[in-house]
Length: 448
Image (cartoon, rainbow, N blue to C red; front, side, top):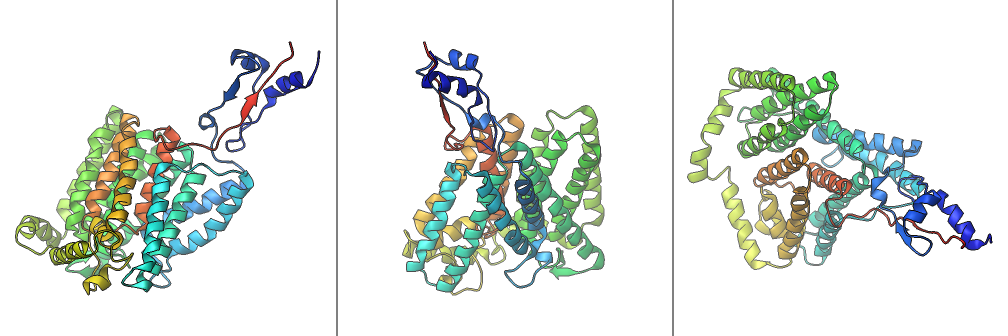
């Protein structure tokens, strides 16, 4: 007899599972094999297409790519100390992205790293009640909220590997602009200080780390892309970035660069013999350029690293770190407040160490959240395939080494790296805290 149960069963082959507007069809045979009328079928929607591919969604992702492209060279075009080209592009991309997400009618369930990022920002916002510098806290919290918004857009718009690779490629292309600007400064003799060269508007240490983070990504892209022109662009970027890092003369980032280059032997495991030969040619060229054109002042700075570590002040950083540790003893739990390091130490200088900066300003609570965030990205990465696992581990270690002498917990590049890592881990299903929106349950009850 044909009844409501039979109608529901026959309708089951047109059941919809919402995951980026993907229509999943269940024929009656599938329903029978699944266990009959009384069994509910839970569909893992992460196996299907991710973000919506509507015109508005594609426009939003394109605008967001322009924003990511500008991150490595944002200081080349500034309207004020805080308004850069990336800031303006972000203001354009955000409302379009929000409209695209609203059009899709769904939000992705947040993963563990994203929750920890939100908690970290929330704790920093609470420091308004005890901060030693209200204005500095206000500016820093606004910056964190903006970075958190960037991470959320990565999470919503780049939940597919293809889009994640596009963001990687876009960042690498952006570093070619800043590396080119640094080389131009060298060719025109535009020195920053102590015969250190950098693109206009950049601190040499910050720029060097921006470029160092691009090295493993660029080499990874050479191993997976088959388009010869793109591959040679990545190789050219490697050459330009390494040379530009040398021109900055950054000693702290030199160590981070060596860590980044450690990915090369791991990433070349699955390369063809022809690609290995081509990369060897690029490596020999990079070494030749370095030996032939690197300023003598850079070599002098690098040769003096050992003595500076043993007897020097590390450009005054040791005194800053000592003052910061004293503040930790005075304000161990809640810290001095977000952005309050300079005021609390009566110094015009920042902490020059991201971990110490967080510990001093956010206290043990904020520091614990920060460490948990890093661990939530590092430990699950061990479950990735070998080549990708090595990529993300090297990237994270490069970042840790680099920020040990820089205050980078507020930088866009830091949050971009964290957001992209969180998206990739969720896409692979490695992070146990990552869940796509709860899919539909399909229930069929045929007539008997």
